[in-house]
View 1 (cartoon, one colour):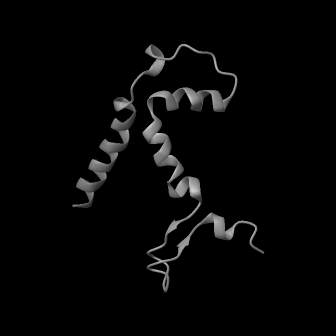
View 2 (spheres, rainbow, N blue to C red):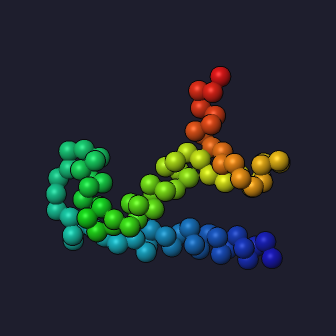
Length: 85
């Protein structure tokens, strides 16, 4: 059973790059900064940009269902821990 799951996981991980779209047919600019790249991406991917801004990765917080006593309610993350002496 475990070998089957590992095989499926490996297949998914290895097929990800194959499903990516080659954007060189759509974008012909030379970029001088990261924000310029982001601005260009958001022209076609505005919804994905909004999703990132609402993600735990961007907000540095999220639900903590595996913390005993905090299974529901309070959200934790790096935001609560970094430089919190």
